[in-house]
Amino acid sequence: KKFAEGRQANENGDRYELVGVFFTLALFFAGRGLVFKTGVRWAFLTVGTAVFIEGTGFGAGEWARVRGEPSGRVAVASGATSQGQSHETTLAQICAGCLGLPIERVDVQGGDTDAITRGEGTFASRTIVAAGNAVAGAARGVRERALALAASRLGAPPAVLELRDGTVRAPGGATVSLAKLAGAAGPEALLDVTYHFNPETVTFSYGAHAAI
Image (cartoon, rainbow, N blue to C red; front, side):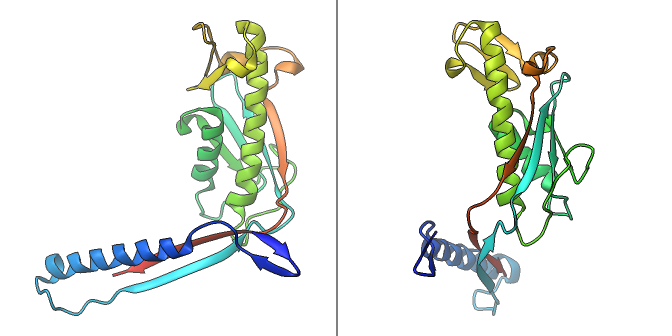
């Protein structure tokens, strides 16, 4: 998306392909419904459709904190509080992807001022854009710290190390766990990063729904 002469243009995404695939699938399942549900090929069947494009990511960004713990688990604190939108799953997925961890080892907490002192909130379809990017930024920060700390222990530069399944691996086979790195003493070993993401502009999402 870009802004020019006061006008807004969407640059990416293929909404026409989405609609084409959407209606092909909708008609396919409608046809199967005619055969298997009614048993009568020419029975009437209604297909309700809705196609949308929506601006998301409003507000002054969002804050997130990601902390590696000596237990091997990772704690995520978000300024956005869930109202039933499954933040506990989506934000955990983002963090797990950045750190190469199973999602089951990520704990997400929203709106706890003991864990994170600032938050913009949950409204206007903004959480994945704002809070999601904040979690990704904090998780990448934890990853960088973990690789830098592991480099000194494994005798290899951070660029050649791999963090996967909670373990940092060197090309020669030497390993050190994220849990051990999180339990190391000293402020330089602190796997605790807070990140603020502030979107430059609105991010647009689009999709389609059908009811048969």
